[in-house]
Image (cartoon, rainbow, N blue to C red; front, side):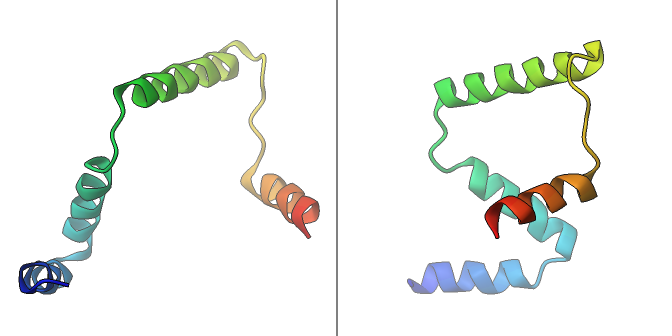
Length: 74
């Protein structure tokens, strides 16, 4: 790691948690952003939201979803 990166890391680790979280979000968002992928995800989010609003799909409680996933992958 370069000295610049190490200095930035040290500064970042001294930030309050909320500011570190914001920094992480911005850094992750800066990686490999493909407009086509972002557009596809936005369309998928809208489609799923519309299904929930219309009642075509019902949300599952988190505990039930986690139990299903654990059972499927154990």
